[in-house]
Image 1 (spheres, one colour):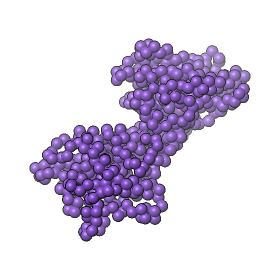
Image 2: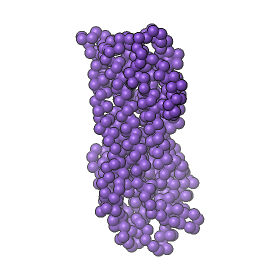
Image 3: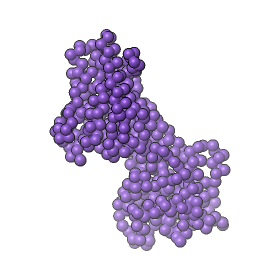
Image 4: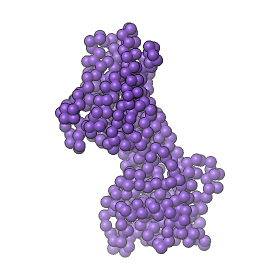
Length: 508
């Protein structure tokens, strides 16, 4: 992949997180060098410019001499590398790195192309900085996590190489990479942005889109597996509501069930008047989830084309403006990721209710034995699969509390309203994993429930999804541990194996 200043896509961030190589385009390099030269000329002409020839934060009033400009940048990185907690996963760090590099490439940060090339050298060599996961308040940038990232560029701190932790300087030497020597403004530019929350957010958004496909497949499978009515999917019902997400989900469910022989088999003289909400109202619920996920995705995609440094350099020929602002503030991402977690809570919650219904034995017309046990009493079937889903849903409710409302001022009160967007992103990643496991539980249960409707078949789209489930888990004929089956299905969801052709998300 080439970094040329354009916005990254979710798919590109995911690819780099998984190991793809990255290069800096010559045109972007020239643009960066030109902006750097214009910035230095403006600073040399006189005046105080935050973070270039001054101190940082509440030390912004301290003017630095020319001989101090390099040392203060290195001091900034070392002093701000104060993260705590478990290390971030490698894919999250690689996502941070490419989002940071792409932002710097756009030329408004005033750094040398050497800085970007140093980041890309580590990415391409498989050297990943070890970054504690906690420490960012999501304003003034993801300061602590990004400082740990930058520390590795200097050949300091720890890094991970092929799963082993080692000293950064030794790892760089082994890869033939020279440690970066920071020049004026470059340390600040490396840490003064939203790159942790944007990188993790991009991975979560990409995963959430894939999860939506799987959740809608599971929903469609449940309708036929429980012999539910397809009448609530009628297009006229959803047109009357005038909610776009709801209409899209209903259309997707109709497409997946197209060709079913199960639905027509009980369409006449079925004694049940209406199905539970988890089946009948699923377009309304998942439609709202779809709208929320797409909104959050749009905000994150916009951030993947952003420059979130401060101050920013706007060079036009010999003219150069150095403007202080607050693009590093993570509130757009924080609110969006808070909303995404809430949406995932409902995606998983309604899936768990359908699992419960299928296993409950309450609905004799569904032809499903209690807990899907072949010999109830002697066997327990998938009884405790529902317990696992319920436990995940409980934790999701805890994670749904909005991080962005919990402001705590920092930096002696200069940074008096923070976003806590990094916490939003970390919790969103946890929520995605939990919701994915709940949908995996539903696919396992509904895949088995379909076996009780044979020789009738579901729609072509549902049968394709059922085939993926069967690649992961054989039909249940006797009690066995369901955990490996759930894990295998969850991994296939993460890999994008469940697709709804009627829903085309370009970012997947």
